[in-house]
Length: 343
Image (cartoon, rainbow, N blue to C red; front, side):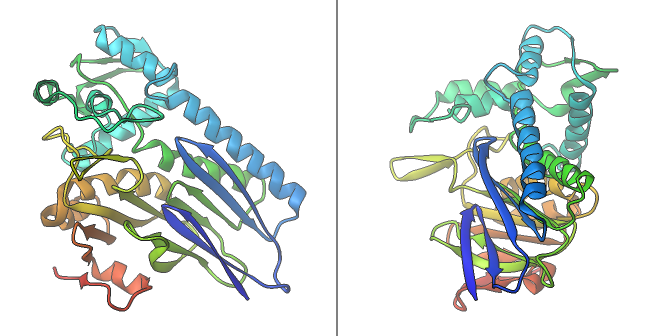
């Protein structure tokens, strides 16, 4: 029996032996990250056609939601900057209404309105440079206080009360795409699959007689820090400082920005959450950000606000802080891993 390790923020662990039905896998690159769809127990023709439909949907969403290249979202941002209302598709309207809801639930820590800050730090680019932004510019953007509650909905026409609002759905789109992909697969009669978008993973059915088994990527070492079984309808999402970041004077600056300060979060290496339910994929993406931004002192309260029972945070010293529920789900690779499961 073999184990195959695939590192994409999380680690997909697939066990294979000759008596099992085949697992069809296909990879692509979209949303600025590697994506993979694995389908168990279907003939290759059916599986390939289903994955092709999923990849096509991923590309459609990428083109629709791109924050700095021509897209429906960037066009809306230009209208906001000019103080003008703009009509958008019902799909984007529904997404933004939901993003407002998530933002309110998180007390504004999940804030897709801070695209201006993300741009100022250089993360709205395919290749970003190790350059610190102008402090006055950051202070001005924070003072402008762009937030999702600035959006005004009139049917499918939107405007913003605040000219500083610049939407960036990078912390929402991957989760939305996971749920869309699951819907497409179900429509095509696929019941057992694993969908991975840069570390946000959604499980459908099982891998034969076993649950899908994945690993949580170690934020500072190759391979996983822990593994767990992911059951039908569950999703797991990780926000980390190890994928999009740069260093200046030996200090790391990641793309996860605290809207209260305008600066990348320090003191946290990664947050992983486990979700389930109708919109498990979406929640796995959006709900991890408030925990990361809240840091070591506030992540448990943030998890409570986001209605998360299964969550962990790895701090800058490598200590794993986790809920009791999450601890029961994990198998750590190193028995010497320092755990803090305190209340």
